[in-house]
Image 1: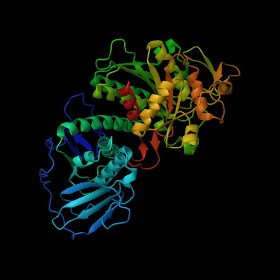
Image 2: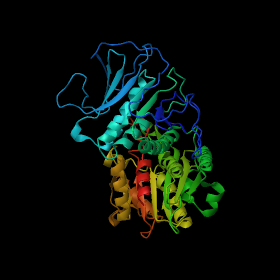
Image 3: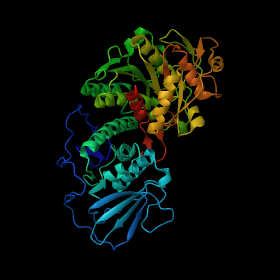
Image 4: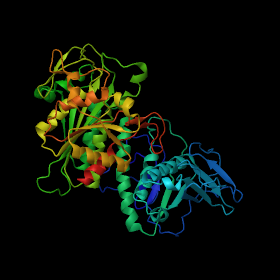
Length: 540
């Protein structure tokens, strides 16, 4: 599966293929990767010669002559291609040195020698601040620079990275390279990009490094899959076509999948998701995925992941503004994250069972759309008075939470949703909001977030907030006003989960997409949550 522009082709060579325009085919676990037009290379040991790239010899620059590069400016396509290239990670010196690394992590300086060899010096920033996240950011810098360079092949001494003895540095560097190379260019005209750029990792310990690369490939492929689907506009990906994609993915992964349609949702009384969808010509659905686990202990209960997948949210009759309606294709990020996580579970052969439930709908305006003042009968039997049709995500999630509890005894239920703008006001684009009724679950998720740099921050679920969503003509209302806005979203969902069920709500509205390029994520969808959930699930 090929969503990144920097792909790992086994065993330890990273390839940068040209722009894709077709929807990537999903490979079965263990199935051969699609051909790149190059032979699959073997692992090269440290000191082994780099094979010829078959390109013309590059122009030689004077010894010591440097061509600075910020990783943001592309070289002219009319220049001669860069020849043999070595990528070298460097910490920044205390004082500026000619040819030395800058203090900006991921910045690249291209150095050339009289023998025609090139070195791309990648900054790790200050030595005293080194961490796994710094290596992840440096890897993103490598990817950005390679994407914009004329290089056709490069190599990196991975043993030097491992010799630093910094926990997690190697895997983080690989993640940064693979995540930083993602681009969504499916609907753009084909450019004249190089066919591929091969990044060879030189090592004297291939048996140690190869599994690390394989794991990074699986994780980053899942993250980039979530990014790819999140980028798809609503005229391409709606609840029906999303269900088709998830079904195809599940069948190739050997997962059990079922899709509950409008008739089935109506029969069970799922008034939340059905009413939210009434304004759209595209019907809603509840997509259910089941991963049995890889040799779990007998009697092990599954973790249930629930994702909000509003393939487009106009706000309904509580219409969004011109500024806020742009980008509402990303309101499905929670759902596509769940789909990608179930896919990754099958690829990594996670031990414990996992259930994924995706609540897919579209919130539009029409003569059939639900309105403020409507009273909905939810799947749980609770009645909800509609204050704002733009507070729709909690309605579809509430039905999904009830369905999960009715169908699957679980060790924990975790929902992910771009639920509120209030969480962005509270936490910005630094951390996602975490609300939970279980302290042990909080600790597990919080630590997973710190370890993967997909960070969370706990918000309260005090009883004092509950009166703010008490209904006038119904049991509860779907909006309690602006005060404590993001907390009230979690308080609403809490009404559908008893304290006896370990439950956590992740409001990822500030983290699911970015309006600017980040160190290892270009502008757009981030795939937030997959790496932290993987760490959490593996810790059980």
